[in-house]
Length: 606
Ligand code: M6R
Image (cartoon, rainbow, N blue to C red):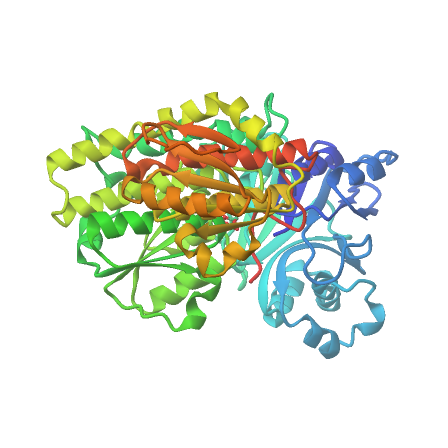
């Protein structure tokens, strides 16, 4: 959480920082700030405020002096409320600092260094700035080295020292920093999307290594002062794709990009009509030898795991547990060297997923990460990585990352079934024939988005809503409900419809909105009868039903027909419909679709 940036080079820094911060706002958007250092006058300038980057832009408008070196921050508040004072950067003496992460022992540090009188904010970050300044006597490396010895927790620290013109220093533990250069200068950010479109390569700054950004070069040093070799990765995302194009919101653009993203994710993994994971380097033995599978993930990524669970049980006849990563290690999970852990994450930086993965590996588990962001912490921590080809996902609400995670999991499970002798050639062919249709079936739904928009208009005044279904439909709806609640603020519960009458049906009254999906042949009749039960209590039911399923006469508020696929693949068209529903409700309510309140896209605090 929180986005950080830094630039030093030939160009005026203010606009560079503001533009990059805007691209990082998905990481937090309750306050923003920049600090610039003028190499000629030696003067540092601090501008910060509660609010968005656009508010900061207004604040910076009057600044006349041009600087070419600076750092910036967009905040998701953890320690200290949302206020101008708590906004970053923080200054103490010669030190100007922005920080992403949480320094857990900041109260202890206040006492240890007797800082109480000099602090203005309630943040952990200002404490770090003060400690850095205590240790700063003209030698940045020494100050950084001494300070990090005292820090407990996660941090990406980006520092300017007012008497070190044109140089930016950085160090990190867990929280990410990436860096790149072009002909005009060097830059760093929390995420590659903010590095500017002209950079061709970037590096992930290694943990506990001091980085120096100079105008024409980037240097890395181990804490003992020895130089450290940088490893650069090609930027193969078209960073211009990270703009909104002609769409009003990233969420709509990203929903619409799904058919292409699914195709790109499958492309290299289907060779001569067979699933081939050799490019991912996942050995067949790992897939063959494991006795159980365990998913660790959060939010949407965890919901992708739940869909995979049905598939694992039906195709692999194996036990698979799907755990909230945040709960995982506190529940004494049974993990051993026969366990295959799947860590699923768009950002690859979710701290709970990262910690759960580390824990599982310590117990001897093998691991495969399903990740969107290359070189991210979870990708580096895992034995093997399967990257999704979703491209940059900017909207806080995850859409294309989810469906590309699904398609990756379908491929992985298909390959597992093959190597375990549970899928013969003919069955593999049939499986893939279905899978490759997923992009087109999603496209069919996207092409009918105006029909879903009409349904959305009926839900604008709802305070509460339910989504009901059974089996795979229930897993699909858990994600559908998360989408609706996070972007529309309608309290939405996904419920296994057979469970309703054990308590929750008490909440169904006249006109309660209920969205039901009916996509599974073996459950269709039971699902339809559960729908009758809520209708009898006055619910207004929107039905999303697989094409070809017969419906007995019944009144629905609306019916949307989902293009038919084999049951286990229905998650693709159904998810597109549910994503669009959430999107249109939020948009028509006039909400900030891409940046729902209180949320951040990358959750790097536990
Ligand atoms: O980056 P990750 O996939 O690890 O993020 C996990 C969750 O925070 C994320 O899926 C979240 O639930 C979605 N953004 C909600 O749409």
